[in-house]
Amino acid sequence: MRIESAELKFTVLIEKNEDGGYTATVPSLPGCITQGDTWDETITNAKEAIAGHIEVLRTLGKQIPIEVPVKVPIEVGATS
Image (cartoon, rainbow, N blue to C red; front, side):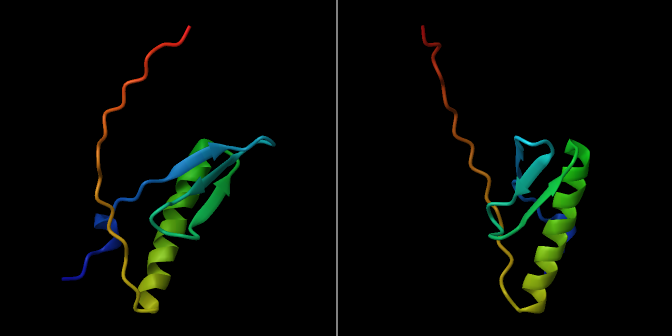
């Protein structure tokens, strides 16, 4: 069964750059990285980067990673 990219969800890590703008990486897709001047532009660019990365994987006949979400509750106590 072929899974369409519209059905896939990936974690995107977005970091604010010191000199302005944002950088987005996709841990499940090594090498999938992009940036943008604004938060919204970075999200749009990340979606395009993921779609392009998946297209390349399919063209090369490589397996597309599937993320399995794992929730781990973490409690952090206040420090004095």
